[in-house]
Length: 425
Image 1 (cartoon, helix red, strand yellow):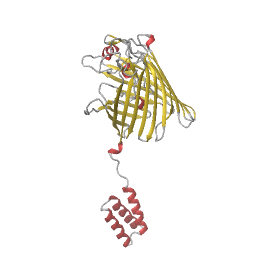
Image 2 (tube, rainbow, N blue to C red):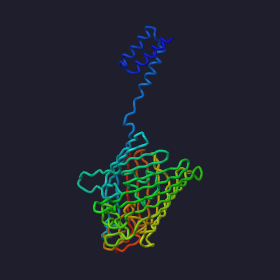
Image 3 (cartoon, rainbow, N blue to C red):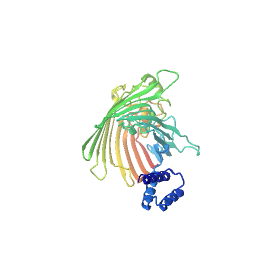
Image 4 (cartoon, helix red, strand yellow):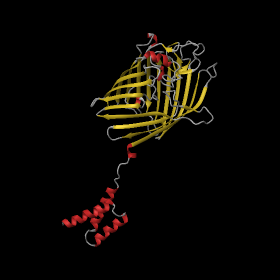
């Protein structure tokens, strides 16, 4: 009996380890059956077991990497009245391309990267306009970071993903969702409680001519609560502080290092912004899932105690969205009202798609141009339809005005339309 068991083990080992080819392994089994060493049933069992073992291949490095990308094609138009003086209507085609990967190192660590279209002087947009005779466009490093996480605690550093991807609850009006901060962040989600603690340091500008490098410290407490089986409530309370404020004041106006050329709205004096910035912000979102499609209400309140004038320190947002476009055939439509006074927040991080003609405060400072940033209020209407699981259609309409306008002839309502086709892969 022991001899018979040894032969079975030997035969199985030879078949599994592939001492010979599949054809010779089969010949070996047949020969053992002919000699009466194995029964046909035993040979059949060995074939099944060997097939199961050989189907398990060693894990390759490629299995630890997740790739992801998207391409958005956009038609965009913005105007006040058609061809109204210096505010000529602008129509353009644009695209956004992003592609990246996350590697799981299997020791509680991950490394991620992403490349994206766009320019290097605009931290809140990766759009590329069709604006030349087919010249080749640039791809930039949009993310390059490492993170470690265990037991609800996560630390990451580098050029990190946008805030809405890492646990923060920050309205896009305050910080654009395309902004990928450079620096360090730490996140902690309490066990058995829907509470999150978030903190970070973001580098804004480093110069060899001064030791007063500029940066931003940011923190937030988030909490969630299920009111009933169909209703969820989420809250956030946070603040950020721009340190080395005097240097930031000197660098923000007309600088490509700290601010970018298309953001404006903060009060200015000469080549400096007037205010400091350490706003606090409160966010709330209520989602009801008892209907055919989810209904979501959102609100944000913002105040900057360091604003030079108390009449220019406040911002808020109120929004509603019905539906959720995630799977083929699903759709959503939403409305949001925003109000951002001049010094309620630092203009350099705000939503790149939300602005108006004449939104810059200082007379003679190119006020006839369209700027995103602060000193603007108005409506946003958005809709999306998921054509396929990996193709989405989008529509946006912004109806905005400058809150305070010191440039005559630029106080008309601005309209901005966008039509998108988004491919995910």
